[in-house]
Image 1 (cartoon, rainbow, N blue to C red):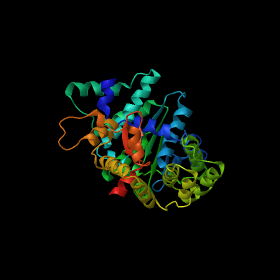
Image 2: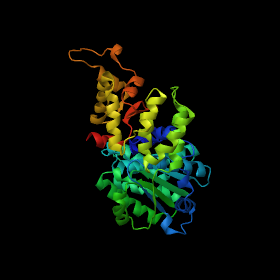
Image 3: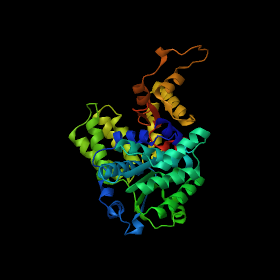
Image 4: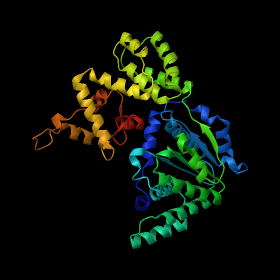
Length: 388
């Protein structure tokens, strides 16, 4: 089956999902799972309520939409994994750095790949049309195309008991791709009544979605809830390995940051990193009392903090610029190679490699590493916009 999966799509949404699973704090996002809109959407398997077939969750930058999407994927997987007949679960994390690869054909192929894997894990033979189409394509060296992808999706949907499609950051797809994708979804949704679509997006595409989807949808607004922010802050404080915290400071953090965040999870992330980067209780309290408003001001403040150590600032800015300017996501080892090169050098010298922990420390929380793939990324795509 390996060759079939490769033929279908190069996209690897599971890699991103695994990273988000590791980062997501337990018991956050419960407000969405308990909302009336979500319960109606996920429980309505008979399509008695046409408007619940699609649930669109709209939120501004930094409100935690991606974590919500990962939570929904896991909730569906846990809730329906043992159901019979087989329940199909597919998902995609859209990203501004992945727009070139996230074409309609590759997206459809990714969904097909995920469904094929679920069939294999369940010990079920793939639909005949899928097997015969692949055999024909192999002989003729034909790549998956739009029409074939749509027809194969329909074949899967006709066999499955129900199917869920979860899309994060729909607004990040290229405009033409998003329009084509919505039209395909609209087409197959009318053919398959037990198909459920969940997506997150920024509000500016809502009118477009309403135009391109003929079926009605329920909507929900995503903001970072204070209880989720507090749960995240508790997790960060408990994970802090520097002995510079007391009960009073902890209480102040839990009281002040959720209010300062103003519904933006990203702000809470940046604020707590600013505080925990300080090495004494006094300096941490000073940082807490001087938190910057808005994400651009927060990025400015973080860069200023990097400047406090000239050597850290020089290295940190090199790391940020390499990640920002790279045509694709870099591995840690690739970044280490790039940073070690000096004028006149004829070969790489491993003794000049900077450790992963030092690279992260120099960037003061603006860079993260996917431990499974060793890929380095900016902490949030708004940082890419900030550098622009």
